[in-house]
Image (cartoon, rainbow over all chains, first blue to last red; front, side, top):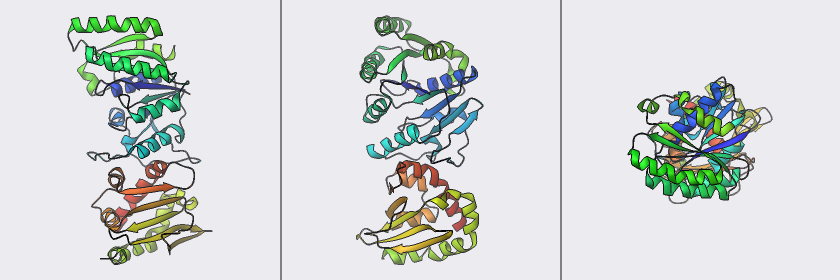
Length: 226
Length: 132
């Protein structure tokens, strides 16, 4: 199983949208995909999947992920949290959740897509340490200058933990000024060439707020599995 | 009011569920057969009581134990008596109580404590349902 982190330097850029659509795209190709919602600050992945909040079961001291479709399975904190309840977990408990999700779920996918928390926060560092040297990553950002600063920090951090960045997604492309977007792309291109990742533009599409459109994620899927 | 006195407000209902619905609960949650729990309830004055729940052979057992030196259990669950009563009376969701940091879970079987929370929250839901 190859872990693929979907991460970002800042929040609210569309990591969950990218993670879910990437997973759906790969599953549509007949690849077995496991999808893990590790964003303990905003665990919303399940909302895109229409999974039932059914009772979790175990097999041999491993939790069984929820089946979404023939090739797609899912597990995350979102299936556990009642709607509207705030999360006041300390580092110890969030870290414990990460351990459960990474090591005590009976994942069966060829790829484990991980919807990670944003930014260089402690729980992300914990996740990166666990996946050091064996994971791939997708960095998600919006095409504007602030995002560049945050994502260059994330790129550095992932490289520090020997996690192979396969793609940088410019999400909501077309929503921001074309001139700014061009400047951002030009700046990222130097890094993409140096470190060997692809820049993938995902167009601004309001339908992506309410449903998956895996066909928009072909280029990303190829960057991840290629 | 002491922890014990407060417990009395829910004890008859708990005993009724235990007597009448135990087997159906066990059928729903067969994982219980291989696990045990120390339930520790305390109040603001530092008073506490503890119970050991589990199986001795095929026999289900609930017994009061020394909270300072309880026997081994696969998990130890601790909470304020008021939190416990609110959960059982359906006024506080078990999951929410955990997420608000009102419940402590210690795992003694090598599994992460959150594993137990994920697996067992449905049991508490069912118990609350039966107590209504």
